[in-house]
Length: 219
Image 1 (cartoon, rainbow, N blue to C red):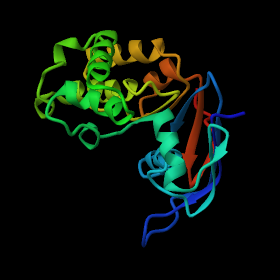
Image 2 (cartoon, rainbow, N blue to C red; image 1 turned 45 degrees about the horizontal axis):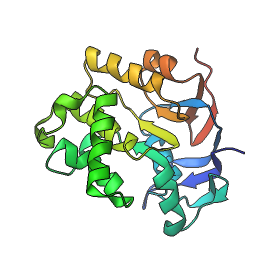
Image 3 (cartoon, helix red, strand yellow; image 1 turned 90 degrees about the vertical axis):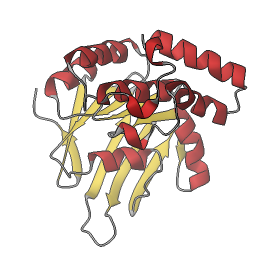
Image 4 (cartoon, rainbow, N blue to C red; image 1 turned 30 degrees about the horizontal axis):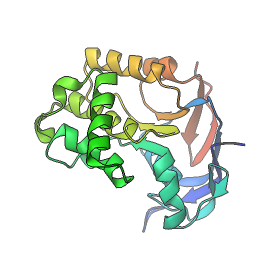
């Protein structure tokens, strides 16, 4: 049974033509799938539909074995699937790094002490402990990107959805990100324009063009 299954997804923003015109995919346990395509093709839109941040005009979203339609049904999906946004500023909103990482576990009902332990364990695992007490908005773009990943991993998701995760990363931080992602056990859906990065993370690739997904012919 797929962890995620999107069937014939159609979606258009208000007042605009459909951006997705029958997109379908399935993500299984152990699978790492990348999605390519031109700017504006709807790649980020597709990831947001997977976790219920956007609702399709037509089609079916099945996540973790259940059809998902209502906001209440997607609450569970967002606990089990972590989306790393393309823009870290859309995801980081607390005064310090530690508070940003603790936010998710606290919302899951962890005690303050449990959340602090998760913060320290996550930062230590990612070799980011030096950022623990930094003011979030003063971080560099690359540091924000890595902290955003930490906030998602602190929730212990079963699936990772990554939207252009190499944005704003210098060579050293990109290498660190590759090392981190290669070490993780979770299945992933990766959106990235960087072919070399995709090849290091995902073994399969789909191309989104003209509103539909098809096997990517590029190596």
